[in-house]
Amino acid sequence: MKKITFGDHENIARNIIAVDGISRTGKSMLNSIIPSLDCVEHTKNLTFLEHIVPALSMGAINPEFAKVFVRMALNETAYNEHIGRNVNFRYDDLTGIFNYKEPEIYFKRLMKQDGDEIIEELRKSKSFIPIITHEILVNLEFFNLLGIDYFMLALFRNPLDTIYSWWKRGWGERFGTDPRAFTLTIEHSGLQLPWYCLGSEEEWLSLNSVERCAHTVIDLNERAVKQYKKSVKKEQIHLLTFEDFAQNPYGELERICLFLGTEKTIHTPRFVSLAKCPRELDPSDRKRKWSEVKAQAKKELFEKIIEMSELYEANLYGLL
Image 1 (tube, rainbow, N blue to C red):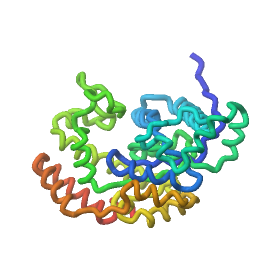
Image 2: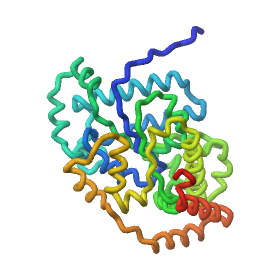
Image 3: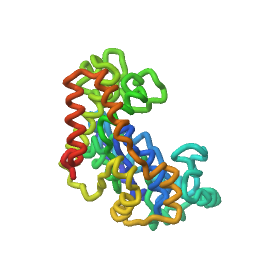
Image 4: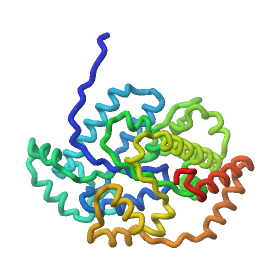
């Protein structure tokens, strides 16, 4: 069979902002504020990226096809954005335009003519397109194969808090039983397991709900740190923590604006307030979580949680 060479399309979806982190690290907080900055569109959730990237990491799809597919999908997303197509009009959704600084922009775009003029606008556009992503830094080398013109805001959170939140959200047992769990899964012994269990399926199945969450959060954080350290594109990634942003949002926003080359707007204070920032973080709350997780987890795994938490608090796993 003749080898297929896929066409490499022009990139008209420039300045993607991947607001990334593992689940339950504060991306909703951050994503609700970032669109208030100058020249930033409203937030999007593009689930296909969270399927393509881990599939690439497992060698399940052709990298050339993945690159072309993602380029076309992002181009179409940017094009539709500029004519008000496929816009989310749900009032309470994070990705809804009523949670954007100027929703009337998207109503005006509905009047635009579909055609080549939109392509020219996109070629000249300086706007950023923020996208909520999960576990992309974990597979950064494969994400980079896609040739996306991106900035990344990589969010971390104390692993104990993340583990506890995963547990309370049911992420130790929802896979294969909850149709609203959109994480890519693999099949093992007739069961559906999350993609990041590949190679440790039996170990994951042997754990209880809390232990599964702890095992996964520790593993994903270790992968993310390893990927960042070996990345040759560190200048495209801005590291930040949930704790720093929640307690000092304006200081962190100054650094984010410097990184992106943009600035705050008159709308930013309102969105910071709506995100319930700045917040006071109660130390006693973490002690309670320690107690609950310790009662459920094996001793050696709990000791690993303590070790990871100490590394995080010391210098963000050696990344600072």
